[in-house]
Length: 216
Image (cartoon, rainbow, N blue to C red):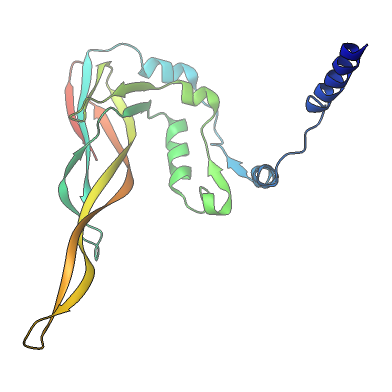
């Protein structure tokens, strides 16, 4: 009798845990409302899967590249004057430049249409995103797309890196026997995480051509 009662209580409690509706946390509610207010823009023209598939068919050409960036060391002008930072084991993605992609890219670059701050986004259709090639860089940032047909292509990747900076932190002052003051500093290091979006349009002009590019 005692065990039957405990089992009944357990089953009753478990049914409460697995109720039909669970109230979401406040932050999750806010995220859902934000998502409901999103405006998604797609290219107007129909995606031609046959044309895209034909552009990605086997050819005799090759796209060879190196992906890298430079740290922004000039704080006043934002210039990339540091040493090369090579893209180590990042994914480089290639899309054929079809009329559909050209329309998408123009929309994507238009900040009045593609503006996350205003909750508006430009996207490609699911079918269009399927027709792509992917390559992984080595530790020197090198990547290859073999067997390419003549045509125009768009390649991109995202390079994340950490920059190390040095500074001197004031630790105190002392006075000498002549009434002068000496300030003491201790050197220290600090780090900054950054991310660079790398993109490039490239054209294979003839079958069998090897095109060398710099993705930066």
